[in-house]
Image (tube, rainbow, N blue to C red; front, side):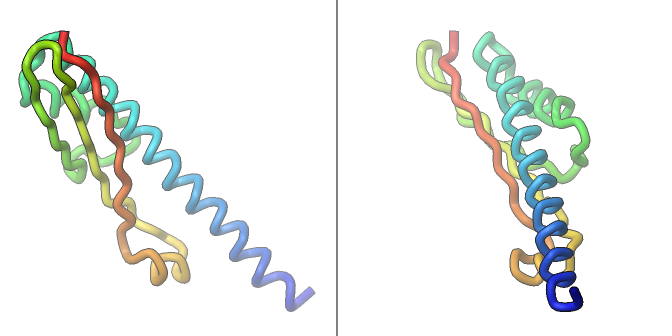
Length: 111
């Protein structure tokens, strides 16, 4: 039991950290989809960035970095967001670094 318990605890914490990273990725992807849709129907760069930050529920909007590749009508518009997610588990934070960069991106054709 004493040999298995540390391995079991690390496995559980690994699952929790993976879930946090995956949640942040899905949130950023959804937020960039909202921003890209706004840009596809005629929104400007500032309103797209604001929409992405407003749509990223559960993440600190001040830490979200948004990159927008604008395009003319009929061409693809790309919205990419990155977020530094703090890793709480000590062993994983030493392996992955203090903050894991999570990215989400969406590309849509400008209407």
